[in-house]
Structures are given as structure tokens and as C-alpha cells.
Picture 1 (cartoon, helix red, strand yellow):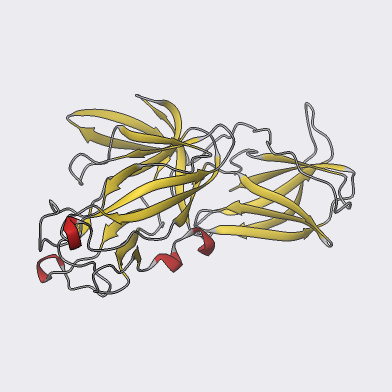
Picture 2 (cartoon, helix red, strand yellow; picture 1 turned 180 degrees about the vertical axis):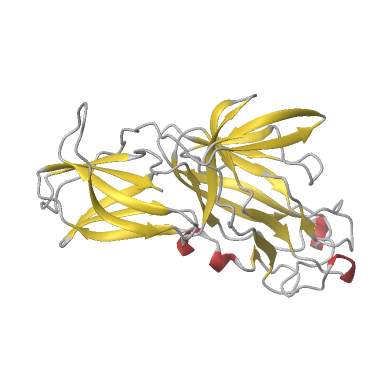
Length: 317
């Protein structure tokens, strides 16, 4: 069964490697199968009509914040970031739904939890690369790239158990000096407290479909270091992919054809289709697929296009 045509991109003058691509692509409204309802509680109950929810076999991942060493002044970092940061192709999936409070959005993040490693046995530590006791780890959403006019929102869980039901803050695409943050450590930040934190129920949402790349920085907001400052230096920016809906991330021309890059979910199959013209009944032709979803970015290359103008879309089953 098809989930309908989704992102449609245009490539003009195929075969001419010097041509450009439009910076904004038209969007063909998706239809979604496998509708799921999810009950979310926060004092009052409200129903999220989640369309095209994440695969039942999707894995829940923990992205762990820590420090590069136990030396005062050493830098914070994501200890297992290499497997989850944008360069790895990993995706945080945001699925279309109708929110009672915010209308149509792309909502998710159940597939990941950002944590802070434990230093003490009471919380399962000491963990390798745990920050020093007295560190209070927080995470700033500093930069955001994505579809034009889009924005990414963070939803904080009120108790770390039930899913968040309200937006805490929103950052627009194009942000470069964002200051919005949320705590990873669960302590009060006092001296010798465990930097540990493992808070479930937090979510993200986007208002426009597409691939978002968010730049996060870890900071120690405790005052237990030299001069009542932090114990650890801020991290470098770490970038994470968030995929809202089913879209083509980008198209490019190479010597042997067209290259298409897109985000995938596990247990789904993807097909790249093309047509020379649009109209009441365009003739779409499959040029790549089935491509098995992995929960990460996928790329197809060497797609031959015979016409001077071609339109592309992604179909998922």
C-alpha cells in the first residue's frame, strides 16, 4: 500500500551538471496509513491522533552527555555521540498528527532520550566519562537548519514519566545564537551532587515537513568550579537530524545521474519516483527501490533522467 506522494522536487535540464535546483520544493500533501491513537495525560487527558506513527520495532536510544576527562575544566561532550550525531545519518522521527492545542504538526522523539551519565552507584554509576560531581548539565538548542519558514519546538515532561503536552520553547529555522535550554541533570546543582539525569517524556515538534538539523551545546550551569563557576567547559556544537514527515532531503546532479537523499524509518520500504510533467494525472515511474528503511538517512545515486525537466517524489510502503 502506498502512503501517497510526499515531497516533490524538480530537476531541470538533467544531464547538464552546471544547472541549479530550486531552493524551495512544492509539497504534495501526504496521506498516512497505520494510524495510531496515543493517550497522553497531564492533569487532563487529551487524545493525540498520531498518523503514520513510528515503526513498532523502532529502537529506543540513549544519547549520553558526559565529560572528556575527570579534570576540572575538561570539556563536556556526548560520550556516544558518534553513533547518533548528524554525520552518522541517525534520525529523530517526527510524525504528522493533529494536536488539540497546536493544530497540525509533526511530533515525536520517543525514539531517543538525552541523558547525563551517572557518577555515583545510586544511579548506576560510576559511568565512564561521567561529569564531575557538582556538575549540572544542560543542553542549549543553539542553531537550526531546515525547510524555509519552519520551526522546531521542544516539549518538556512535567514529571519525566508522562509525555509532555505543552510546548516549552520554539526556535526558527536559521537560528544561529539560540539560548533556549533544558536540563539533563536531575540534581539541584549543589556541590557533590550526581550529574546524572534520565528524563523520559520529552518531545520535539516541527510545523513544516522536512529534514531539520539542530545544533546543541552542552553546558555546566553549576557554580561548583573555580571562582564559583562551572566545573566543565562547554561542549562543541553537536548536530542532530530530525525528520518531519516523509520528504526528500536534497537532490544533486553528478556525472552518472541524479543523487537523492532522504530519511527512513525501520520496517518501511522506500521508492524514488519521477515524472516529466505534472498535471491532473502525472505518470510516475519508479527509478529506485524498494529501499529498506534503517532509521537513518539513505542515498540513491546514478538515477538516469531522459527529459530536460524531471520531478521527483518519495513513496513509502
